[in-house]
Picture 1 (tube, rainbow, N blue to C red):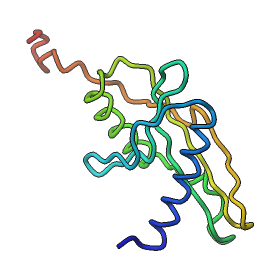
Picture 2 (cartoon, rainbow, N blue to C red):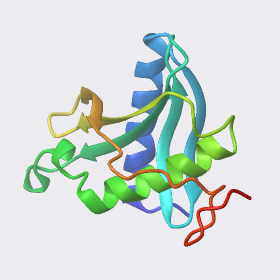
Picture 3 (cartoon, rainbow, N blue to C red):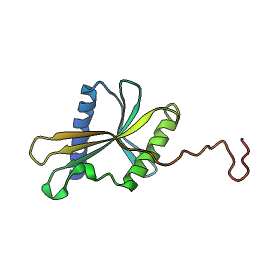
Length: 138
């Protein structure tokens, strides 16, 4: 059984999915999980760029702005999960970006703020074909 927080999160995700579809994007996954991380929405834009969309929502004034709650640790988990997704869906060389969608339900009707390229993956993907320490290719 879903908690109230989970139900609200799913509602916000549904709004963002509709928003992305109206923009002509294709949806591929919701709530994709790997190793403790989760991708709220995975989509592709009209140019074939993978979008990893983090959805944040706020329902009460005491919670502040939803788009400020994607901290460095959350970004790291999204990045790690996105690597897993890409690896299993065509390879790591594909174009992708990390977006944040903020839903504000404090005033009855939800308003959307959408941030393209909200953060960048700052880690370097290791070349797994090279043995560490010897530099020889497998």
